[in-house]
Image 1 (cartoon, rainbow, N blue to C red):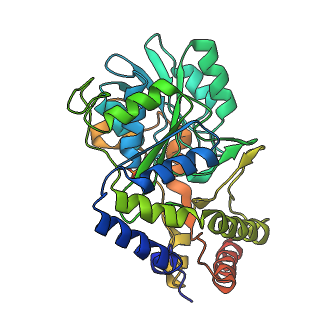
Image 2: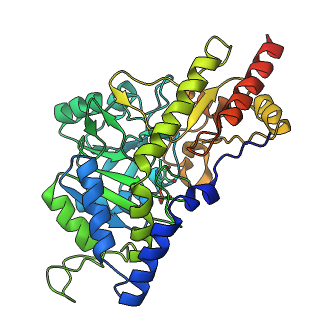
Image 3: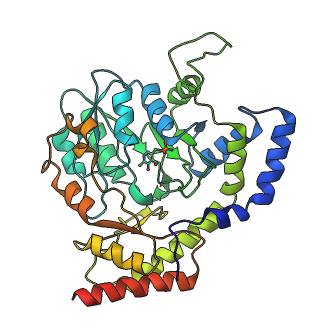
Length: 370
Ligand SMILES: Cc1ncc(COP(=O)(O)O)c(C=O)c1O
């Protein structure tokens, strides 16, 4: 039985009528930028995350870059980051002229390890940028405490964590700001690229709104600073609004699939994902870990089950970023996890028999190994 990693066609069929009506309205109105759908998306997401401001931008990468720049991070500043993440987390730090300082991850959650962060602090450290990997929050309370102790800022890479929270406090409310991504494959996926900044900080919000339009100030064609072209097209905002209305149901289905995997795979000689106490996980990915990762992937492929490796090579081992780090062996947990991790299909369009087929296939692999 074929089990795809994602099913965008079925996903779209659920919102098609709404999207087509919104597109017709936008296209005939001529209101192509910063119209009512941008406003609706920003307000709805800010409300759902219980924060004051939502600022829609062109991508998650832009959200990261703009929010940090809006908070004053720049040349001479060090930002502590993980390297077990998508490239954008580190790329933006370099792009705003700051220096990324790499720290290892926690072996259970694969998110930035607070103890490793403590060790990486220098007099130049200005901020910590944890990534809420796979849909669960990193150890936000520990980072809040470290930041307070050392006078640092915390930014959240919430690209994979729309609607994730810890004890009811959502991404966006833990630090200065959080960056969401709406890349196609995300839980809330655009028809292309999109992102959004969540923040409770009025000044970060004001500057972010300015930076997304070339640094334009309160008046048209008067500039406060050097910015970007990063408005979200109105068509994209409308597409996302239609999907946002379905997101709670879709996330509930992801949670049900995750619960089945966790129950049915328990006890096998394979590491299952760990949810930290107090975390509400939104299951962007369901990652298992085994030293036989490549064999497991091949076994699943034989059975027409898609799987994916996020991320096969950590960023400190990529040529453009190598000089910021200390080479192979410098982040042992990150490197071991990269060699062993495998993400299974988890999305709202999986049928029960497809989930059962994944379970059966992993069981047959694990028992053959014992
Ligand atoms: C952890 C992480 N950070 C940042 C990004 C960048 O987001 P985008 O692709 O929307 O620019 C992504 C998205 O892939 C991501 O997964």
